[in-house]
Image (cartoon, rainbow, N blue to C red; front, side, top):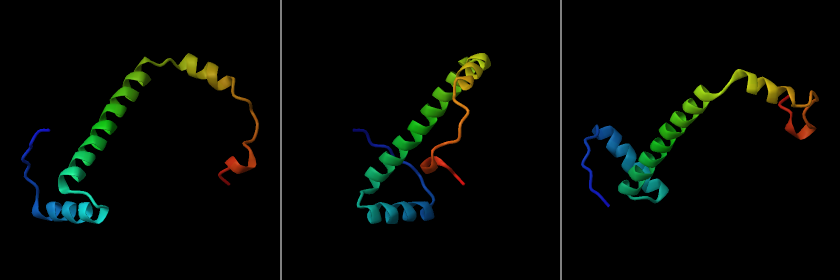
Length: 79
């Protein structure tokens, strides 16, 4: 484990402390979890952007054309 010192506005610190306590976490656990979640989001967006840049419209159209043209099942409808 490593130690990291950060500066936070007092209001943010108090909110983090309150939420961490409410959820049953230490502030360190809460912040480590939040940092991990943010890192996962950024890495996922980077991955999706790379994949999208490598994609080809023709391939998309080919796979889309293979989808049957029928109404979704009753349990899968949005209306």
